[in-house]
Length: 505
Image (cartoon, rainbow, N blue to C red; front, side):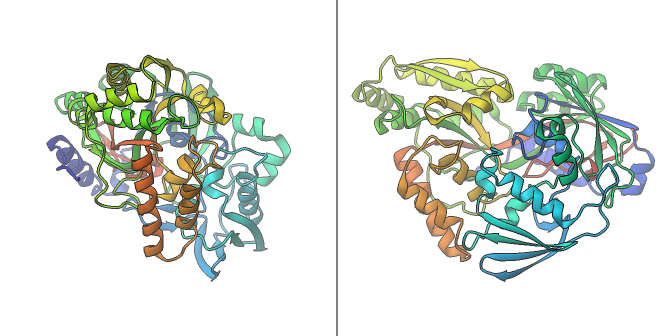
């Protein structure tokens, strides 16, 4: 299924790797005092336990440290935890750094790690990340800088999930409460929060007492710029240094524009159509199969995107553990799709198609047209990202009939995408199937890799046969950057300011 990388992607990826060779001390000496980054939307949350979406993650990941992290090659490496030891199938002991301080000067201790784990796994707190951490059943501080985590049975994905578990200061959150903490977050990361101008920008400043690699910029400004052409204009005019979420046409424009460059990376993110299988017409498998046949996935990848994406037939990408070769996507067959729509009695059914400006609306409009051509009456429901997420996580009966999404768990494990989107207990799922639930539970509960892969293969085949959800393609992300910015994007889409440097233009 793997297609050759496009020439554009090959050239840009090669350039990105080459730029990483510049000496950090040289780049730091020539660093700009400020970096300006254009996002699509403003963050929906700056509390790292409060939301999970790219625009929030891009910002708060620089304010907070995580238990562990991934290096640029994708390996799990120490961050707050320096080492870990498996005490039993269900217990892991973590040794923590003893030199980390929060931005208010207070030391980070084992109690903060325990508090953060208990907070994000508390169902009453209602974190949308709960499904990624709910295998953790206990956290105990066994010393000032040691923590033992207990899981509900063996949990092979623990480290991969802890990559994105940010540690918050217990004393601050308990004193001010969740709402105030979201508006004025305090972390221990390389950058500290300064200001949030709602609807406009978030400003961070470098934390000079940071224990690790210091950030090269004194301040960082993340701006909300929903229109991609405006982000492009900002970059070309020099009023932005880095912009996110461009398309392949814009990448080609950057190749011929002075002072700027595109940066492209294949990600672990999978684009998909979510179908509410509990509501008409998609409670009928025939109608769901019609949708699968109605979408020209190759046409979307080759004709619209053309940035290195590849069609996938399963809810995972080759960047995930749990990817299984040989599961093909549904072919494009609009005539058969029409027949199935008629057989299901779904012709002319009104369908609300949920989306947000953060997603490529060319794809949304193409899908709308393809579904309309086979007999469905589809209208686009475009809302801001916060409203889109609220609908997606609402009561099952109220979740969208159909929606476009692109999911990344930043963990590079199938558990991180399949469990939240398909397990019936998840507040993201629109699918109810006890066999699927059992397979996903087995996949996240066995320490034997072969057992896990066998479970995910069966789960992938159910996804395909029952059209529980419709995978579309493995996403490539295109950023635009000033020539002076030296940065290598990664598959997990983490935008670490302290992994950047500046080579004077």
